[in-house]
Every structure is written in structure tokens, then in C-alpha cells.
Length: 456
Ligand code: AMP
Image (cartoon, rainbow, N blue to C red; front, top):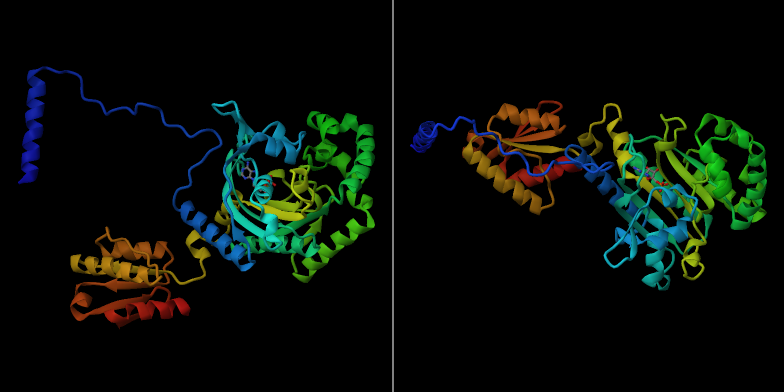
């Protein structure tokens, strides 16, 4: 009846239009503003969104297991915080800051990294009065005005862990273990590249030697490195231009300029890594480019990748002087940051590993056939959820075939099927998707049955 009325209305409209001889067809409404994504930004939509959530859960699990505690700091900070801590002459400060003036003329920026914010918070919130070390973790957005390309965005996210208030080398090894095991738990095979920058005195002595050497080879360096030679000669070491790499291969290495204490510290970190069977490569050219690092610096690379600048999944190091530099008490500290987007791309590229399969837990799908069954399933999934059990489902689909296809797509290990017959009998079919074996279970025992499956 309704449909007929609608049709009638439409035909009246058409007649009216004709009598008024409106010749132009009615065009679809154009959006008032063109829709754009700001350069270097991205949306994360399903199925990546599901993988993102799993990566977040894996971070929560590992951070909690190693006794790290969650923190949040604002995305907006004073620009001076990063200029003071990262240092001029670094790409992040000189080229990549999203820095601007707010309405009061205050110089603010979108944070380009997390460590300086954590150090600021540690000082301002009086965290030195807490039991030391303070172990903090977070996942949050960072902003760098970088040239966007594969794996490089202007807004990106990091899983960040910081241990503040302890100078023992075992802390560096523990942080490397957390970063390494996080990536391993997500199915990635990685190797740690590691180096030591020693103390500021070690570094200053080394810089005299390095600068002298590089000046002699100036003619072979790229234009950027010629500038780096004046501003921040250490950065020449991680230049990937062929001519520069050839020069760097012959350059003096910082390990030869470390004091005995710094060498012993570095050896200790390496011994812990040996103990933990974490694969590492000594990398004398690894300097991480920021002023605040002392002693251990490291980066994590997926094994299949060779030495390309952008492929580090994460990195970190010790920053014993940063908190004092920012006005706090002398406080040793160490940390790492892993790039979530790069990890997501790496996990997605894993052979035979779909996002849903990253979970080692059984996945349960709940299918229905008929309206009564649909209502029963709707009620049951909420009862299960209240008991901490999550089941996949699609209540909008009516065909059982379509639902079973979906269960396969989700890599469900088991599918519960509730049809009209089962509704009458008070039962449910439980199908093992691998073996195809089906079992009839009493509806009152659905929860018990799922708990048993999940525990298997
Ligand atoms: P960094 O603080 O530069 O050492 O970066 C640590 C990690 O964050 C890197 O290893 C990357 O995984 C990630 N990362 C850094 N910059 C970007 C970017 N522009 N886009 C995406 N990920 C990034």
C-alpha cells in the first residue's frame, strides 16, 4: 500500500514538472566543500583498524607484563621544549616541526616525539618522589613535516616506553627486550642494531677526530652533509648517499673513543642481550641524530630489509642528561619508540598471516537462521559479552551460506549455528570449522562450551 502511494506521489511530481516545462534534469547535490586529506595524513579503516587494535592490545599486554604504567601528555607543547632537548642542527627541529603561534603569540608545536614531553612531565609532576625507576608507556600521535612516502607520514603514532631514574645497563637491555618481544609477538622477525655514544666527554673527543677526518674528505660529501659537517657532523654517519657511505666506511668509529667506564657499560648491555638470545649487530654508524642520547643507542629492523633509512621499525637509547638539561635533578633514563604505522605495514606484508590470524586464540562465529533465531542470538551475544566472551556475528545477513562464508573470512575456528529447529529444541549446533565435525549442545550450556573451546 505504502509503496503505491510513493509511486503516485512521484508521478504527480513528474507531471507538474512537465506542465511547468522545466527542461533541466535535477542533478545530484554537489558537496559544498571539496573533501581532502591533508598531505601526509591518513585514515585507518577496517580491516587495518582491527589490526591496529590488536597491535595496541599487544602493547598493553607486554607493557603491563614488564610493569610499565600508562601515561598521557598533551599533543601540543611549547616549541622551546623540543629545541632545548633535541638540539638545533637536527632534522626534526630545523625542518620538520609543526610549530606555530597561537592567538596570544605563544610559540607552540605539535609534538614531534615523546621523550622530551615525558621528561618535562617527570619534572613538573614531581615523579622523582615516586619509587624509582618510574616505568611509563604510551601509544599516541606525533607530527613531523617530513616528505611523505611509503612508511613516512606527517602524523604517525608510536608505542613508547621510558624507564626513568635508574642508570643500570640491565635497564637498557630490558627496554630492548620489550621492543624486540613486542615485534616478535606480532609475528615479525627482527634484529637489533646497536651502538654506544658514551658520555658527552667521549663524544666531544670523538667529534674532534671525526670532524678532522670529514673535512679532509669534504669534496666527496653530498651538499646536505657539507652543511652537516658544520652543524652536526655526527649526522654524516647515517647519510645513505653512496659517496658519503664510502667516506663513512673509512671514518674513525666512536667505540674506539669510549672511556673504560663507557666500554664496560656497553659490554654489560651486550652480555644481557646474549643472555636473552636477542640477535644484534654492532653498528658504529648508528647515532640517532638527537643531542640528548648518551651511552646505548639502538634501532630495530625487520630481517628481510636491508640497510634503508626508512625501514627502522623503532629505536631508542639512554638519555642520562636530558632531565637535568631541562631543569630537573640529575636523573638517568632510557627509552624506545616503535612506529605503529611501519609495524602495521610489516605485519600486513607477512606471508600467510591475515590480521585476524594474528590471534592465537580460537575465534567463534555465531550464525542464525530465521527471525526467532536472530533474536535469540542477539540476546545471547550480549549475555556472553557480559561474561567477557566475544563472538563474531552478522545479524543483518539472513542466508546461512553467507554467514558461513563470513565465518571463514574471519578465520573462525568454531561456528555456532542456531536455526528454527534448534530454537524449538533448545539446542545449538557447534561446528569445528577445520574438521567439519558438528556437535549438538544444550542452549543453557553455550557459555560453558565456548569457555571450553577458548581454553583448548
Ligand atoms: P624516531 O623517533 O625518529 O627514532 O622514530 C622512531 C620510529 O618511529 C621509527 O623507527 C619509525 O618506525 C617511526 N617513525 C618516525 N618518523 C616517522 C614518520 N614520519 N612516519 C611514520 N613513522 C615514523
